[in-house]
Image 1 (cartoon, rainbow, N blue to C red):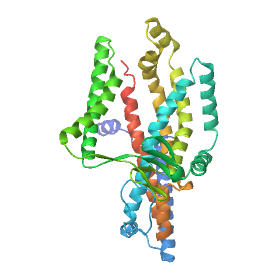
Image 2: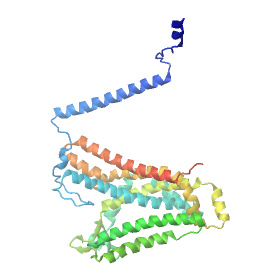
Image 3: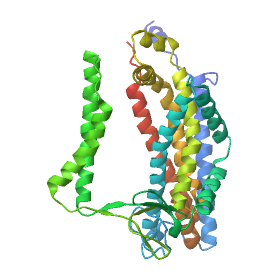
Image 4: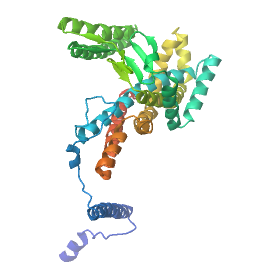
Amino acid sequence: MNIKTVASTQAPKKRLNWNNPTLRSVVYQLIAVAIVGGAGWYLVHNTLHNLSVRNISTGFGFLTREAGFAIGESVISFTPADTYQRAITVGLLNTLRVALVGIVLATLLGTIIGIARLSKNWLIRKVSSVYVEVMRNIPLLLQLFFWYTIIIETMPGPRRAHHPLPGVFVSNRGIEMPTVQGEGLLWLLAGLFIAIVASIVLVKWARRRQEQTGQLFATGWAVFGLLLVVPALVWWVSGSSLSLEIPELKGFNFAGGMTISPEFAALLFGLVIYTSAFIAEVVRSGIESVHRGQWEAAGALGIKSGLVLRLVVLPQALRVIIPPMTSQYLNITKNSSLAVAIGYPDLVSVINTTLNQTGQAIEGILMIMAAYLTVSLSISLLMNWYNKRIALVER
């Protein structure tokens, strides 16, 4: 009797049942991982075998060798005696420079055009609509060729360069502008950093003040004053030397100052104009997603239309604008690789020269992929952080 009671209280053993969806999902995932891992191992093994048969060395040891080629435009100093590693760094910095400047300018231009698409003025609305439709439907590569040809062929030579502003010269060699030289430049940059931090604090204070009292603060003028006065004040207190170097025509070209090359200008114009058309549609759709009642309620309070757009509509539209805007920022970064078509020494161009000289094609492609992946993920993380910060908090 006791034996039967004990046997009856024991739980029945679970058997593997193929009809169990959890079991099937685990098995299918294991099979998928095994297939992907096997395919990856085969590709790596086959590649290494073929390279060894052809006596092609692998690895990144070539990065420490002398590059032996010049780069026409660089953010940092570079000579042919420098290493391939420094050359690739120059290419990466050139890519980041055009991408960051392009993101800022495309955002400003796209926002203006997107707002103009909703203007009550018939002419402004139609002109902005034509701009968006034309620029979005012409391939970016053709636009780059167009701008490069316009800059090179229609601009005069250095001796007959246009002189739109004092110290500024525009020719087929690029745009020559004055630059600041001397020890005081570091103090100016330090003052600019202080002004930016102070501006952020001021904007947060003004926002809290507005939420508590409803009174507006002239934040724009205050920030402009900080950015203008603080760096100059820091430099003046430091007492360091500072001079303005103005470009001068010497021989067949200009000497001194700062030069914006035709390749950089053409690439920047193409990226900004092409991407701003897409950003304009993002801004327009974001503004239209805000209910019309928000406009009417703010207008009933006597608020001007410009303030309604800036203080009421755009803050709500940002929650719709930010996600697709992130994609456009990524497109600017990735589309900058077309720079090789017009001779701008970006990351792709420099690595192409490197792998042609060293034969390290696989390593070169891997570095390009890693660089663009890292930059794209960094932009995505930053934009996702900002998107979460402005998201509505549910109660």
